[in-house]
Amino acid sequence: MSLNQICSQNGTNSFKPEVAFETMSLTTLNGSNVNDIIADAQKINSVNATAPIFWNPNTLNISYYNPAPKANIPDGVNYSDYLFWNNTTGDWNIGDNNVHLGSGSSELNNGNYTVALGFQAGNDSQVDNAVAVGRETGKLNQQARAVAVGFSSGQQDQGEDSVAIGNQAGSLQQGFASVALGTQSGFINQGNYCLAIGTYSGYQNQGEGALAIGTNAGGENQGGYSTSINASAGQFNQGQYGVAIGFAAGQNNQGQASIAIGQFAAQNNQPANSIVLNASGALQDATNSGLYINPVRNDNDATFNAITYDTVNKELVYNSTKTFVIQHPEHDNKYLVHACLEGPEAGVYYRGKGDTYNRLKTCIVSLPSYVKHICKVEDITVVCSVEDNIECSEFFPVLKCSKVDREGRFTVKSNIACNFNWICIGKRQSIETEVYKDKVNLQGSGPYKYIE
Image (cartoon, rainbow, N blue to C red; front, side, top):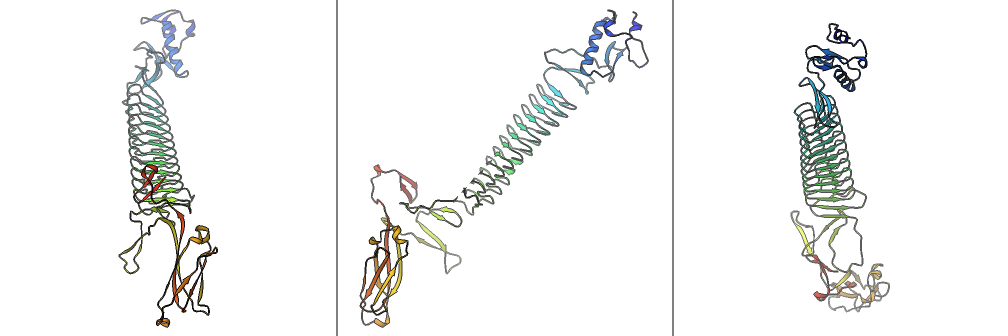
């Protein structure tokens, strides 16, 4: 069989063997064995079985139909090397240390040992050891050792050693060594050393070192080194160093270095340096820098001093002089400050007025019905004093008081009918007033210390 019979020219630089390759004899063409030509054709067919091939008379090589002169099939060097068409150089290349599959994947300025799988994945300036899997992942300036998995994740300027997994996770300007897991987590401007887990977590402007776990947690403008855990916790404008744990805790405008724990704890405008612990199931906000707890158990048997608790605002406060403050009744620009009474017992008192203007010159005084349940009525001290009275100005009335009976009643008598004041003082509980330091464990701070 002649060479002209093997390759009959048709004017289009294509050829059609007159017989199958398997039946060709060993004929050389420009120093090549026909079996080598067959092997080249089989390489081409293994890449794309339907692609047309043609004979190039200039290079005397079998090639794909288009493009022409440089479309030679090279040999691989290492196990698992792969073949790809390089549109920039216009020829076939063997991949020996990168993996990029998909139109435009790792197309421009790609580094070594990179992986780009998907349309335009790692398209431009993918740096050494970076991984981009999915359409437009790590598309522009994906930095060294970064990983992006999911549509448009780590799409632009993904920082070194960062991880973005999920639809548009860490999409724009993800910081160094940060992690975004979930749809649009760490979506825009995630800072360095951040963690965002959950849909829309750390969504926009997550500060350096911040932690956001849960849907919408730390959603927008999360301060540096703050923590948000659970859905909508610290969602908008969480202050630096803030902590929000629980559904919608510290959700809106949490102040710097504040703590909100529990569902709806400090949901709105929590002041800086405040703490809100909420287990009520209802909204509990804070109005000042301080401690707020809801609920707090009421213990009527407490022995030692207790801190002051505002039952309306759910605020706990203390004062070194044990004072309470109210608005001054006469001056709008002043407060009225009174101190608490101190004594060697947990005492209670009741006071009132009475008179003996009756036939028997006698008055029976009844204390509240609950008194007999909180103190021993037989130990109650009763003090009475005459109130100045014009009608008996020439004589001084004499008052006599009985003990308090089991029902919380006592009797006042006088020799002359008069008005009188009375006060009853009882002991709700005893306390040990003098103790040895080496035999007790002192706890607390300021004036509010207690013995454990």
